[in-house]
Length: 109
Image (tube, rainbow, N blue to C red; front, top):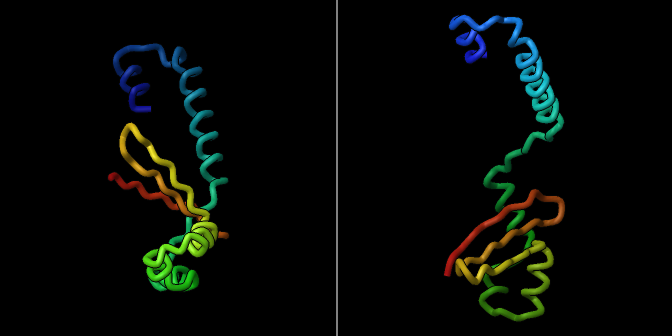
């Protein structure tokens, strides 16, 4: 709107801007409607996060022992997906516990 006001102040005929202003308003209204349909993200307290981790059992013990069957069960419970990017020597890892939002981390070697 500021650009349109500046253009009018500079001598542009306001009627020439009507179509552009209407289009900008339509785009804004559509974007607002789309945003209003997006569910609000609910934060979790530290206690809730610790409870989620505790519900998985002794994760550190499982990983240190590295028993392939137990690791597989853990990774399946977390819905772990790890993709290795050889060019960048990076791991892209994502986890999505059942009923939880997706979380991702990246780590290099």
